[in-house]
Image 1 (cartoon, helix red, strand yellow):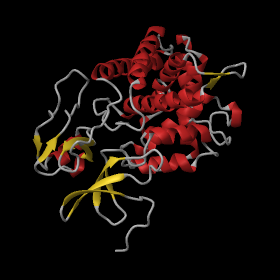
Image 2 (image 1 turned 180 degrees about the vertical axis):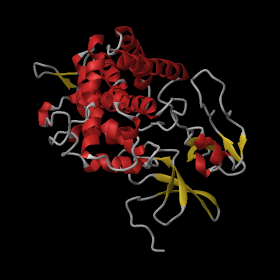
Image 3 (image 1 turned 90 degrees about the vertical axis):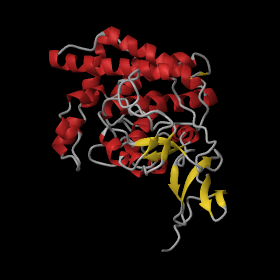
Image 4 (image 1 turned 30 degrees about the horizontal axis):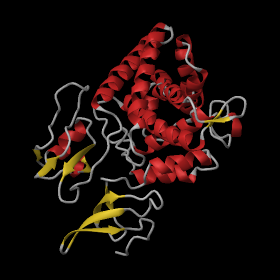
Length: 366
């Protein structure tokens, strides 16, 4: 099984996983096993389906772990959609988010944590959330998945530091839950940003950027009546702060940026780079990884970046990539020790071949 962009579908392609274009529980738009035709290369992107899993000789026996069970995905969809609807109502009425709505997100965060505790590292399949309604909805869920995976590894490996300065390894699920809730609602304040600014294809003016930057404070105010944990609220308030002081809303730096927002910042930027928007195509995973790697020590905390790089591969298993010599191949294995040199399947003169490829090598001359 391997993942391809929907626009690359050609006649005779066999679908490996159901394509869901509506809320979980609704009938699939297409079922696994169906043979696709090239017309779907145009139809599926219009339906919001940017990529599909297919079966062919290059993807044979490649097993991709899904981070969430179907039951949890359904819970996540229902609770996050309900929270966004409640936030819209709260904005119109001038009230805050009801506590019961945020409590439902806590239950969802628990389910996500339980699923992710069983998910192997470096086995992300974050490209398959077609059923989620819009960018804000999908982005919030993907940032939550990624942030929880980073935190799980960080806290299991290095522990966490309490207010007395003690390093601890207990209460991990409780901390993950609080982080998950904060990540699920980290961008809720963007509902108050005018769509023409939120989806503007070009660079924002200074005045437009000032409006965009209000979304963190707006999110905090929306959530204040829900009596959220201060740790969860720090994600909403500070996920755009940077350790070099270049972020917003307050330009805090260094240790002033707490651990939860440090994790959120990396997950947020990576997903923004690798997600498709109305004004830009999605960048491939290796570009998102490079953005985070290049920001290590300036924008992003180096220790959190190290854990990010252990769970997010620049060339994920099952993804199609272009080799330095110009051939197309599919990643069949990746090593945590050398993630820039994946094992890749290509079609050679004698059939399918596997080779280890240094993706940092210069492209072959034309």
